Length: 405
Ligand code: PLP
Image 1 (cartoon, rainbow, N blue to C red):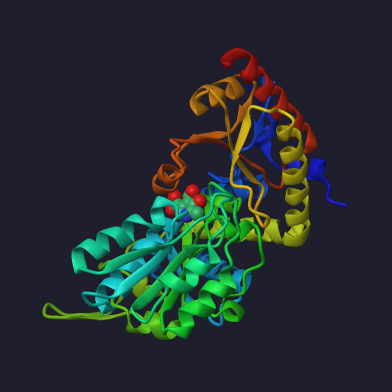
Image 2 (image 1 turned 60 degrees about the vertical axis):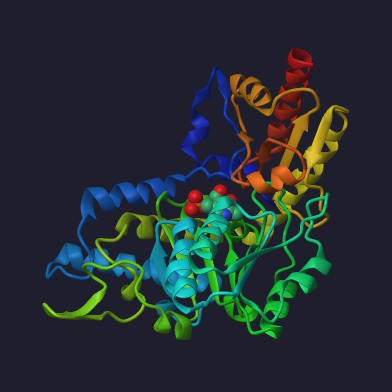
């Protein structure tokens, strides 16, 4: 049995009152709360171990380096990469995608080549490609999304062609919750010799990822959506590709030898990690993964799926609620509008009741425009949410309905 009360006790955020109410946190798709073990680990690092990595000849630096590299191994295991050299530390999903756009696509693609994404991408997996396509005269193509928020599978076949050099797509939509048909997309991409990138920002907390089984070329995620610190993330890349790619940024730590005339670069993964890294980010992420593993991803998934089912049923009883994203196969992310009310007003009323949701375009403006919308209210559920949270959300939406309609 999944014990949500025991999980909640591990988060200090629930000890506070928000606008006089207990916190109902339904914004985990934006960022998860951080458990005490992660906060304590980062605090301990700053208090006792704060030291730079890979270069000091003293105890603290050695200790920091060991903790930093232990985090890399922990992340390697999380996604089953074949080597820790394939785990590049970044500041998050966004930076990982920009790194691949700059060091891989910009370097290797030629005018007329095509990059394929989907219509439901977060701006982080759209704008870097759009910008690159303008700069290099490449073509950006989109796999379509159907009205229920699922991917049009015929479109996968039509859009990915011999001209496609890269297919970059989200494993799970941050606005619709839809899980994408990952294997199908990768298999089609491989059949035309295209490389693949999975934006796993949402997927990482939902499903067990095995990069070797998926045979994906690149995968990116952010620690802050996995109970870890802000400003830290991961780019996984296949070793043979990373070897061929030039560095993304230049400076200390990414070098092997430097002369006034030329520089040789460090081995993987350090070639892509210029400058002093986010050491406490790595250390905190290690704790976050241990915490998440202790819950068991399958237990977490079934808990959240149960919340999704109950919340959807209860919200459906309010006839003014209009859903955006009703695909069969989806994460516990519910985007909706109250017919006749603005999403921001609904969010404000919920906030007064201590209920944290996200409102707006959720960094998916083109998708919303396609369906003639400007925004939604998004309630996203995670490990610490309970049926009581759903009941409070329903009370809040009913209150918003009384006040706004
Ligand atoms: N991709 C998806 C699917 C997301 O949900 C997000 C964040 O909401 C991002 C990318 C960007 O992540 P970050 O801001 O941590 O780089």
